[in-house]
Length: 343
Image (cartoon, rainbow, N blue to C red):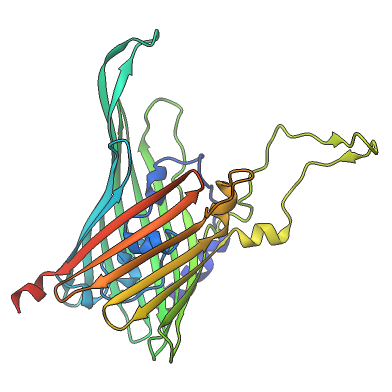
């Protein structure tokens, strides 16, 4: 089992992948819970009772999530319905298993003919039904895997796929430091919307490290994402060198340097733990800020914020992820442990 953890840690450096716009089922990369949305959409370093974090890192499923359920809903405009529901159960000698459904229902849209005449409406949606198992090997190590059946319906066109997530996690004996390795969305598109439109899934390899300060209520995390693709910058294939009108010198096409390419792989996250009740969260994703940058109006793109409240029988979380100065995503999560209602 220890060898498996080592393999997971090095797998990201031997994989080839793509970023947005080149993949089938891109909705798989949407934040599926408020805590993750508040922490840059990719939060893989927690090992606690939060069932929702197990969907992003199945190695974090543990016995504290037994008989718990999570409801997650994004607050989007235009009648779009996006969220997730998940349930976990601890199984003796097996581990902690979970079932979850992620969905994006895009609502009703107008159907028109080639002349633009309205001839009715149609609906569209993306869905992923998943089953996960996480197993704690000892006080330090845990592993996990998730299998997803993916279905997409866009008017009369549909597509189906299968994917798997695998993960490993190390925890220090004092429980203040964790290291995680996760490979998500490794799979295949079984059927395509039309002929000759097969595309790879948005496979992504990530490494994360988290540390909680001993005498202060802060947990700092650093997540390295898209480790299966070094260059996350966009290179315009049509760009050509230009000529400086004053000097006549040839100005080469601008390209990203080493520091720019490296910085795009990291998300910085922080959680403030105020007693046992209140959680305050914030994160910064440099790649998101650069990808969605609005010229002359950078705004708060790439930043995310959120909070959580732990009550006696349930927990409520809120997350705000800012894509750019032109758009953002609000998400609310509610989770509870059924056993708490019996006491």
